[in-house]
Image 1 (cartoon, one colour):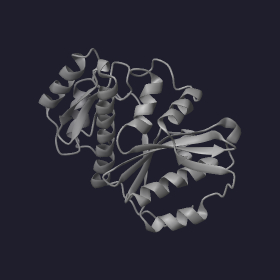
Image 2 (tube, rainbow, N blue to C red):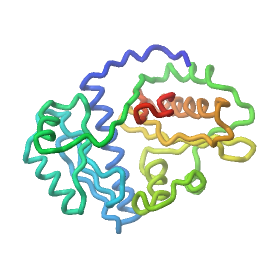
Image 3 (tube, rainbow, N blue to C red):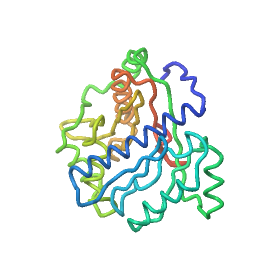
Length: 259
């Protein structure tokens, strides 16, 4: 896809947009989960421009997001973080951006915090001028239709993808439905071929930032350009919604880096 050079530089302004988008996403997830499943005790607490997130003891969203991007951090803030999570029976987890204020890794290191895992973030510029280019260069599949899925279709997709289980709150299937379709400003796109859903991926939009996530294509339909078409469809939707930044998260070395 030869869309024009994005000319993005990894500066603090870009990092803040990305991290604060993630803080919004997790906070919105917690709000939706509280409405649908109040027994899970999902809640958030603001911290500077970021937040603390709790969505049940098993949730992968339990962490501090966006801390250290608005200036030096305070030991008293870390005490608040530790009290918040330990009162809920969990060790505190802090998401640290490489461009955070140096006082953040210094403080965490002094108090014995260790790196648990890493994620890469890829971002590109996108705007209305990209729409025509994306439409022209997207793979042409006369028998593939891509559209936003209904809640029932989203549930069926994640059930067949094996997202069920007790790895999240209230369970994995409900978690993925909230994260990818039920919370505000979020939609799940499905690619259909011969009446069967063969590829899917979510798009969440907030304050001009589009995050593309949870993409998967059934094994028998890979390497046919369907996944790329789904990626392009979400970029088009982001551009038409007025977004100027699109991003994806992947683990280092993961196949998803191809996105």
